[in-house]
Every structure is written in structure tokens, then in C-alpha cells.
Image 1 (cartoon, helix red, strand yellow):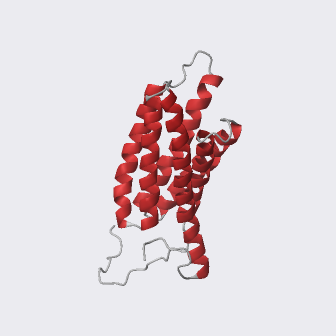
Image 2 (cartoon, rainbow, N blue to C red):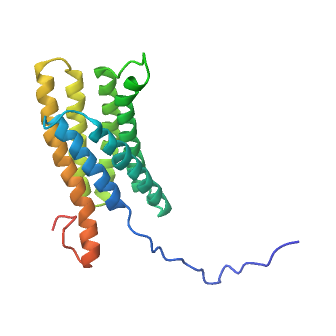
Image 3 (cartoon, one colour):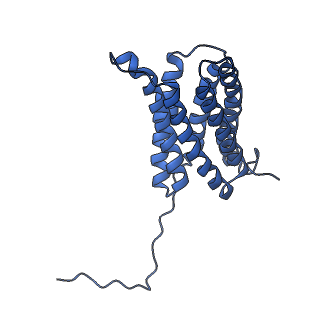
Length: 205
């Protein structure tokens, strides 16, 4: 038995999307966690459980939720970026913790870390190109992120030398600048939405 015929000329019902913009949460999660890790790289404090906790839950889990929310909104860029960087933070923390949790497991070598960070830098480069369809603040954030990954790769390639320490310190300061750009991009969207006008600009005037 066939169902009722569908009239293609009949008006379609469009359901308005009334959900909040999840991107600011993802950008803040990425930014705050990146700032703390790179404050360590810059020499302010040693690597400890504070960074691992932030990496797993705010940088990691929170961004996974944001990626899912972006998928629900049909935003492909946000889905790929936030889900990917959420997994980046979880995998980075796992790389640090696993050798201490599993006896006999070899820690990641400087060479393998250089490859790990390098492939993330390559993907970030493609996402950076995509930001030219979005806004200037994201272009700055991803541009700085590419430089950060490049410095971290160099720091691992030169591991054991005096220049490696200098490069990691420089990466720390550059990473904090990257984090500030990400936090600004996220919080600007919050401020602009609350005020109903551009208070913190996302594009060049």
C-alpha cells in the first residue's frame, strides 16, 4: 500500500536553530590549555598534574563536546578543528602518562615527537588556509599555531643541544601569544553577541 502523495510545491517547514554558538567554548578550551602548557615551556613552572588535568578535560573533553555541537549545527570546519584538537590534547597527555602507568612502555622519543608535532602542524596549515573564508582573528590564531608547531618540531629535532632549550623557551612565549589569540577570538564572539554589536572586532576594519 503506497502512502499519501507528496506535493513538491507545498511550503516546507524550516526549524530555526536556537542553540548557542559552541565555538567560543572550544576556542577558550584550546586557548587556556595552550597558555598553561606553554607557560611551562617558557620556564615558569615544571610539567605537572595541573597541565595534564587541563589537557584531558578542558583542552580535550570540552573540545570533543564542542566538535559534536558544531556537527549538529552543520559546521564542517568547527567539527574537524575542535574534535581534532580535543583529541590532540588527550593524546598528548596520554603520551606523557602511559610510560608512568605501564611498566616497560617506552616513552615517546624526540624523533617520534617531532613527527607527531609535524603532522599536526601540516594539518593546521590546511585549516589556516580555510580560515581565509572566515575571519581575521582565526587567521591570526592558526597562523601563530603553525609557527608554534614548527618551533616545537625544531626543539625536538635538536634535542640534547643547548639550542633546543632556547627554541623550547621561544616556543613557550610564542605559544602563549597563540593562546591569547584563541581566547580573544572566542571571547570576542561572546562579547559581541551579548552587546548585539561589534565590541571586540574579529576582522580588520
